[in-house]
Length: 377
Image (tube, rainbow, N blue to C red; front, side, top):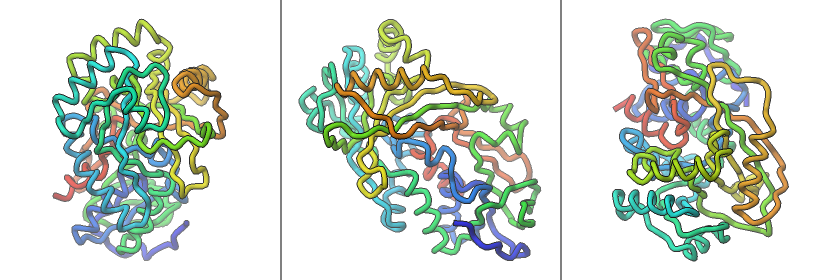
């Protein structure tokens, strides 16, 4: 996947640093605006948070500006899937309620959002999911949400951008950024505008901007397990912990009672920062049908290199109960993304003509294509 070294003397309208979804989203919108674009990526292909996720485009559960970006991003995902030739599943998300407090959150949220959220009985939730979740009292269908396979969709987007004339240079590590040009391990690149989309590594280039925004690294654990009994789960699956993770749910009046109930009844979930949710690998992938299970969340400026087995044990114990079956884990991985208590996005201009952009909330797949549109409006 390594590109040949292009003419370093060429000038570009936009240089994007980082070939994850945030960087590619900016390249996509710049290219659509008719600009000459180069993307610089230190690895031979994207290996960060953009492919270490559920492949879940969680449109419905966002709030405020993130919801605006998510709605625009949903349109862009569908357009890109058609143009770049990768599958996208429009089956939404089923949020399963197993406590009265969870039902109360979903009912309040559905009343606010209207037709985009459909309340479900326990039987209806089981019908949509393809299995009956343990202890389900009911649920809600978030019909706008999408699913993609991130490890194949992100490279497909990059390939499509190349077909549009975007110059993507892998294995080009950035050593310095100045107004008007970028210094890389493969020469200098001249550009009128520079977009720095390096996620949690924004502090490697602009520590003051990262500190001002309070950027930390969120370290998470995810698992991939064999599918039990040929199960097919078209929508994504949310549980009660998801209703405290996403702002659209968490801002409801009913969320406080749910927070208290979970702290009282399942303190281990809070201790590991668990968002107990699940998606299924798409049929076109090598791991077709496997369940993606997650995820835990721990925050630090520098992430520890050591993994505590407790995180995986908590996830597996709760999924065994939820699914009513044993699970055989085939792959495990660590994800890292930027996080900040000051808001879902860092957008800073540390130098004239240079913009640093990080999604600091774990919703890059969901909103990056909308966020990037605002940069070229």
